[in-house]
Length: 244
Image 1 (cartoon, helix red, strand yellow):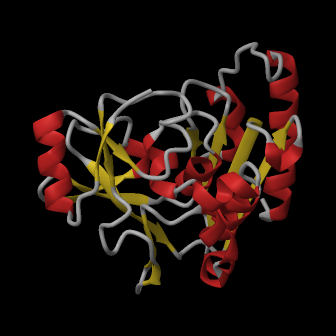
Image 2 (cartoon, one colour):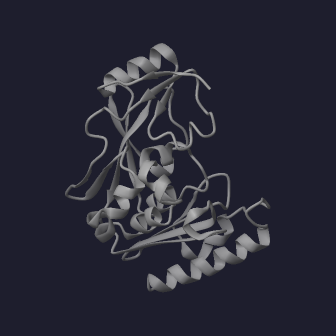
């Protein structure tokens, strides 16, 4: 495996390199490098300032795209204000991966097994994108990234009085989820997200109809029957905890 590595110092420089080379943005590389999913040029984002912080704003917690799962796990702000995301971070992979993997990279992989995306969808998160100019997009509406766009931060509302995340895997936190689920509640507003039960993480806003939106398949992680049974148990647990 050979490639050219670019290390821009600004967002504008990164976008320009992307336009000139058609390269791949690189966060931690825990997915791209392992699976060789990149072209000849890699554009490392680690030297760009402002992408690795967790900050509290009036209505949101702003999380930089290069914040690692280890940072999320150790953040008292995330644990207090965004319990579902904190639980997802705590239960993602093993310590080595959590020390490297980033929230922006996890979102950008668009995997139906992403623990963080399940929590973030339940929490009604937005992503901030940059492709020469800055814009925001609801995470639930983000299904791909335009050619030069990169995720720069995630904005997670603080309005939910209750949120929680649950996961079932073959070897607990060290494995890919067989199924994961998160629920967030703010009074009568309820959002439930489920991963590994379709081609993407699925969002539902009506607890009584969640199971109707799930389309599990037989794979090496579990059968349709097993996944459906587990989903029922997780849904029952989370709705009871939320007082529904």
